[in-house]
Length: 486
Image 1 (cartoon, rainbow, N blue to C red):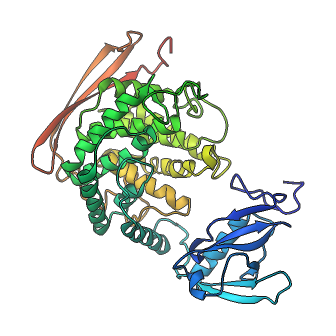
Image 2: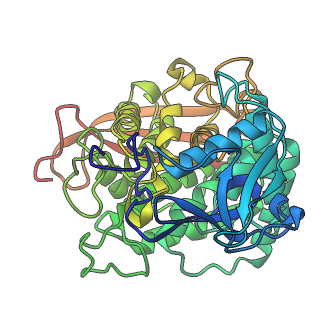
Image 3: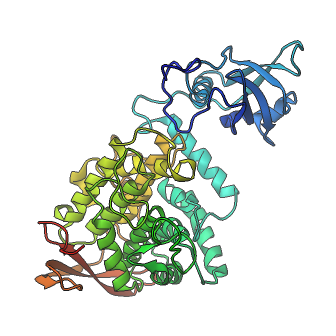
């Protein structure tokens, strides 16, 4: 940014406000309750909108079009305006909650100071989001908001159910139960997009693994059947039952497909019927991206570069689910694939909010994936993928300043942060017996190279006291490399 007249610090986020563009906006100035337009010369601020029932509206003095001369004595300069505005909010929340806007109704009019009072949350602790009262308050506020804002469970891009499971609070679990009851009563089945299966499906599995509520199993099984119908060449497209060959990704959209793999593994863990070919072929397809760069956009070779758009971080979760379902566990190739994907996703990122659709997808999965690697020695004592996905996904939102979970373990959390606070059907005290057996030197279904096959049977006790028997078979390539001819 050596040639920039505005930026003295290189922006962290991409895209960032351009100093030559006539009109841009910061759509939400946090808890203040206004949107801010950015005009030239870089950057003149104007009120874009005032949110209903917000602290800004409570003043009765703010309206769209007003010029903002300064905020708490600061004008925008040197750094990304969003970072400066965020810092102003952080300082106000840590002190008296006062956000003072110097306002002019029109150019040349006398300025008037408008004081907006936002909730005082205190300062972030040095270890935030861990052992941080402010982070806990953010989580509580978000959970209360979700509880009042409708049903957030079911197929779709809404991750509200996963959030509520991640808090570890009984009151939030009761809200989740209500959502599931409503979903089950109204669910009609039918077509579901891979995006909706991959983002909405895992939370439904997590709910069952957490509660043992069998009413959700038919919905999970229906989505697994939809994943079977929409899979093409071991991957998934974005929309429809048929791949779009004209789309440059060759019929695949891996930003959606990688989470479908995670869903199928979790669905298998729940004990529902999952098509074996769909599970095995998609697992093998995505496993082969691990350690070879970024997960491709579509049906391509792995990509290079410093932006994964959440695909590599998402793959870390799929590999975590696979590792937890194999007898080798932490010694399996899937555990190694999980670790390399988590590290690649996190440390190779050079921009925040950068990627297809304008960003944001990467922030959901990138930081969360690194949570999978924390204190890995406790991995084998975790009680299932429930804690893996719900807990670590929660951590990612903290790092994106959209906190997702509250963990109280008396110190740094394990990769299964919910385990210390949550009781569910897979907890060690109630876990039913299981048997395992191993056969080796089998042949891949494609008949190409010998593999090792793990077969594991488990009895899972459901909420009605009945046991469900299921068998998981995962084909694993030999350590020397990929299959010949792939």
